[in-house]
Image (tube, rainbow, N blue to C red; front, side):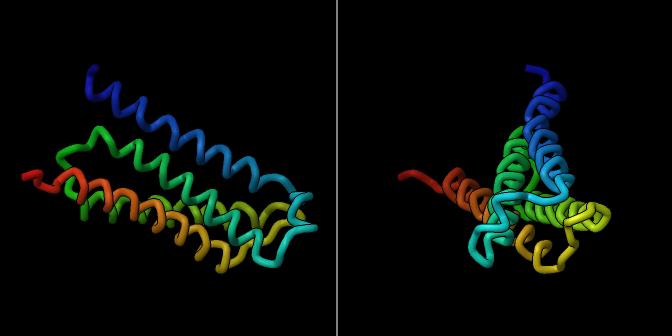
Length: 129
């Protein structure tokens, strides 16, 4: 398969995840949050951005020659930027708020998914005797 087509196909999950986050962020009041435990919204942010991070991992598959360090910098930057833009977006939605704690939860989700990238690279580069 052509590398450019492969890059576009592997990027599709990122767009689906980003659009899903944007859609949920556009809902004025999430009904299931009213009866949940105190930190449920932070846990949901971590889960959402962990999944977003997994979609970024898929998008990075065709970039085999890019170093792990460069991938991690780009990966965490994209996740943090999208989390910040999502918080900004929520500040315009009635019934929603923009919180630094939510952004921190987003970044935690991204960092947790980046650990999978690190483990994959360590496993892939491990020499088998």
